[in-house]
Length: 435
Image 1 (cartoon, rainbow, N blue to C red):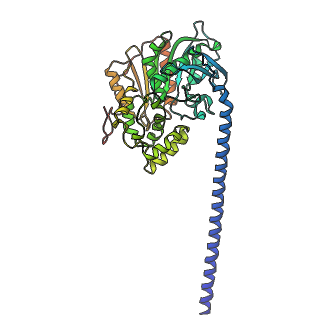
Image 2 (image 1 turned 180 degrees about the vertical axis):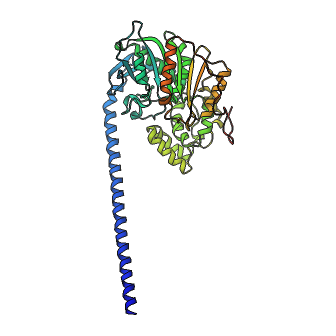
Image 3 (image 1 turned 30 degrees about the vertical axis):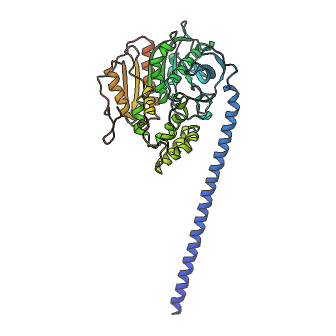
């Protein structure tokens, strides 16, 4: 019928018009999304170029002289660092350290000096060791746009205590490579020589007494300084070491994380650095095809970038390692060698560990607590409920300040081994311990 036909045409016209409107909306949304994406790409490119320009401008400061001075702790250059430090001032410096074979090398660092007057015997020193940040120049604390990182909750209180804080970048980060990541014999030299450098800065008035505090990889460096530091620098007095979420039990951590996103980030750094200390350490035999293609580039990125890519690769089922590195005898021996033994009873040690840590997992450090307490270490263990890896130094820092203050006052360190860990000192059900 005519009326029905007209009604059908009307409905069709309305439908077509609605579809046109819907299409126009989709096009508009698409244009907006593309515009936003374009702005994001432009912003990223501009930001990346700005970062490159900033790092290029800093390169002369971090360039080693030829020849490098032979005296360890020599300050080659120093300049103000533009960062707000409550109760103190900040400077960046380049100082002389050495590689494990005795070859002289340079490291960047930061030094924080209290505003209050120094005591006649000189200021006590805290050596801070940062965690894994990536091996690119812009990742390095003294070269980055965020030099304080996870220091913000405790750097002010340390200035109030009147302590000098010196923070090594480690040799090979921001300076001539390689960096020997998680190699104790390299880390300890960089930490101790940073303390020596602080003593060579007149306005610091740094004395010979020091303590250490580190996070993650830096916790590894801090604790190993408790083992090797007194013999390496007998002229200095090490009064205690502190660590937040320290990477100590390396075999257990590696065996638990090798096939995860964490394995991509940490593993790439190991692949790039460990053969420089362990010649002949097999690489191709333990890497996937994707790992061989990406590890060098990932190691050179800052951890925020490499971490995002690692999560995506994990999502798509990609792994850096083709199998657990512990299945390879050479890697197993190296991981065991870089795992610190229990500290002696006369070296106080403070370890803080979060129960929500998904990078340095809680249970390997629960094993450390059990083993070190059984061995008689003067261990103070702080378990932080629902604290993740990134928050560990920020949350534990104020308590660390109190603990270090007691060490400088000469008070005895009382182990709290009678309090068991809140997590079992063993892998979760369904996984096997390597020990």
